[in-house]
Amino acid sequence: MKRKVALVTGGYTGEAAVSFKSAEFVHSQLDKDRYDIYTITIAEDAWFHVDDAGIKIRVNREDFSLTIDGHLIKFDIACIILHGTPGEDGRLQGYFDMVGLPYTSCSALTSALTMNKGYTKAILADIPDLFLAKSVLLFDTDRHTGADKIKEQLQLPYFVKPNAGGSSIGMTKVKELSELSGALDKAFHAENTGKQVLIEEFVTGREFSQGIFRDATGNLVVLPATEVKTTREFFDFEAKYIPGLTEEITPADLSDEQQARASRILQDIYVRLNCRGMVRIDYFLEQETDRFYFIEINTIPGQTPQSFIPQQVRAFGMKEGDFYAALIEAALKN
Image 1 (tube, rainbow, N blue to C red):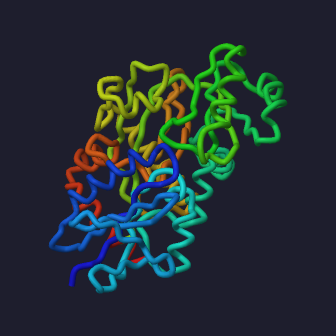
Image 2: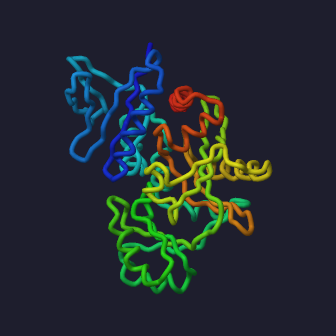
Image 3: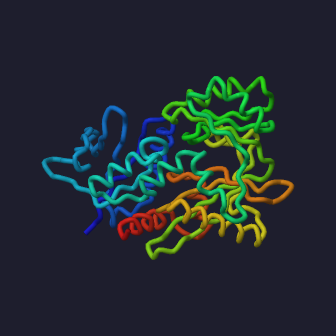
């Protein structure tokens, strides 16, 4: 009998547009002979599925079910492809835990923790060979007084970003102190990002993004790395989603030692944060020292055809449909 899969997409932030594209690609790759797939949109005003006739059917939130033509549809699993809140910050995972529905992403606790960049760095602080850029975390109560703290503790240039955001929304590279106030306002005003701002010292080096997942046998699998080279000041929203602004090299040109070191650190991060399913970890290799500097972890990475994870899956020699099926089967076993 085919498994019934709720392919969950949408969300409450500007990342929703990317979520729809990701979900569309995942839907196109999954084996329809193996899975009955229902795309579920999570929006602030409604949770719903649109059937083949274009009719919008609301989700029963008591048990996350659908009723279509008088037939009750209950799902075997939720495949969460929803970037930002509520799919990446633990809210949806907590709900699924309460209704007893398995899901493909990290747990509610891990999702909530990793959505907070500052808290994540604190948990990872003592992993061998992992370095963290010096930083200051500001809360909403600090927004009018935090500039002095930043100037005292950090050296220019800075990266200023929402502490709980994604897709580089609200992020600014600050090269002059005169730019700091505007950058802080931009980060604090980013929609649904928690009213916390992280300011980090800039690390000069090569930038990489690399996926890791646990398969149905329980083994950790590290995918090939992608090196990111952009014509922009940094890898911002435009660089991520406007063609031609960024060169993405998969697999990245790394030495055997660098690959082994990155693989070891990625596995340590995955285990330390108690991750499940697939995650993507972004990092720098510092130009002068070759040190591995953690940037952030993404527990619901983009899944458009051009996204890093599909690129890496193909470079690994795996079909995307088999990869998504492996995530579903692993989640059903947990």
